[in-house]
Figure 1 (tube, rainbow, N blue to C red):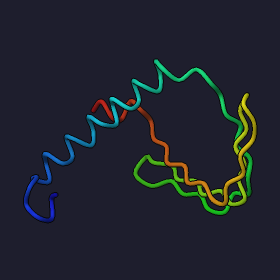
Figure 2: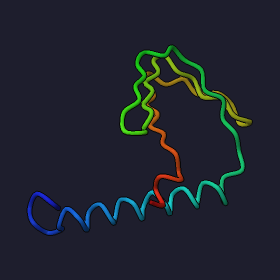
Figure 3: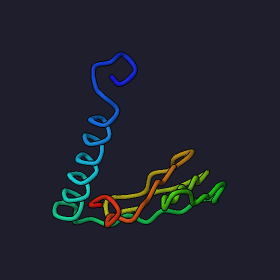
Length: 84
């Protein structure tokens, strides 16, 4: 939408930040289950206060069972940084 001129870059950033805040609030208040994650750590990096992990041959395990997946990408940042 930014590329075709529908949204300005500033408005697009505001929308993404609001989405991240809403998602964080929903995860904190509504999600009650826990998941265990195992796999081979293929890549990790830390850039601009954001961690990125890529796991291969991963499996997710919760109370309902276990699911094997080929690759998992986890992107994590400090939620306090979203409110700035």
